[in-house]
Image (cartoon, rainbow, N blue to C red; front, side, top):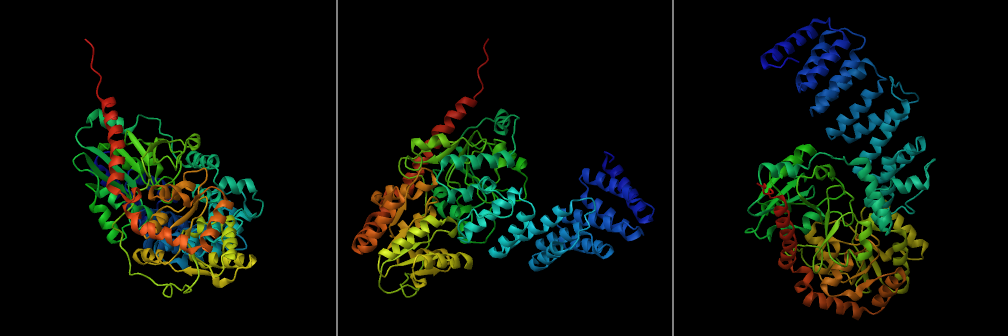
Length: 624
């Protein structure tokens, strides 16, 4: 394209005139459209296709319609893209690529069943016209996107069936394996490593995501391996000078220490529920607090409160990773706190550019992320004992008490009764309100043995989905436990969910993926937790909270000890009641919920690190 704007406009006008003439060859059209795209004139490229299609009686118009639809989709003009793909299919009904892309546009438009129907047509086709693309890959595209969409719609059984069909056709699909393993966890469909097609057990293990691994294994070496595999496959290697160093050369850091919080979960999410007071209690005379986030705008009061607690808020939704990193660097952030890790929606490549001189992992991922550029992790000496350190790429920032912040202003619902919760009036109530994907076959079987030894007791659980419920009831029956002794609570608004805790006698923690936010909620509401602590950060979270709240005797270190302690408490409800009484009288005044002190402790470490970094960044005096 010509460099000057007027010349470029004239050149575009010439292209459009030629497209309207009906004499432009398809190859010429595609070349000119590509040049416009390269020059950033994507709208003009789309108009060029539109004019060519309207005026050129070519047997290859369906190809042009396909390309036009692709451009419109990239421009987020999904309704027009739908029309373009439908035109292509009218001209060439067996044009599989157009049908696949039509499904994507329908998904963007929220027409889920129509999208699935288009992909189903590809899945069920006896033969696929591949137009130079492997026909198997096109069928896999339809299967895998259908499974993905069904999973987002929480239609887990349908999604899993399509994943199995896909893996039967082609075993070497790590991304599909990752979802296959985790969707089995979500449904409590044990064992999670279920053979399918020619997929080996090794492929299932290696393909497991870090989140799923944290629920499946307490082996810190395996957790580190999974994190490193993700980084190797998904995270860029940035070898240029760190962005923070370039920014410092132009404008040295001075004045208040700037803390940046990086997250996509500053909304109605576990991280967003824990952190408001952290942001609100920062000492504004010494610190300036920035949010760099791509969180969903859920319209909640929680989201509004989180943003109000920030001095500066930069939206990163729709901003590419390099631009986002540059924004952080230009803001002169001293310490960038990553609240996401490798959890869903994470953007680790922002951190790979090193936009801040000190980059810290906190809360979002309770364990090592192995991310290049993240050198520190906030912890305490319980969650990160010396024997765990060799398996963590980050160095610990130890807080004196508990690593976890929480919110003392969380809204509470009206007190609930057993009858309102569907619980029997008498008998011991065990509960576990962790997400079902944290459950394991080993722990659930232990719960069934506990119920068998505590007459008239019930286990109160969160009903994540109908398949998890059915699978748990089936396993309970295998252990001789009547279905009525498992009580499933529906999801509720946070205030009502909190009110439930007070009704239960004892919270049974999961292993190896301990309760985090849920443990804080339970102890805040005065319900004791029985936990099992293991070797990894995530399997020691609840133990950290219990230590800080003053109930270390509820920490166990083996399955047998955990089971025996649960039975002992269930058979002696007065002892459980004494724990509840202690929490009601002293829990909220304990070190666990002393948020001003927790924030001061964190600030002390941040200030020490930031000031030391600023001294290192000062220009060296030039010798005479």
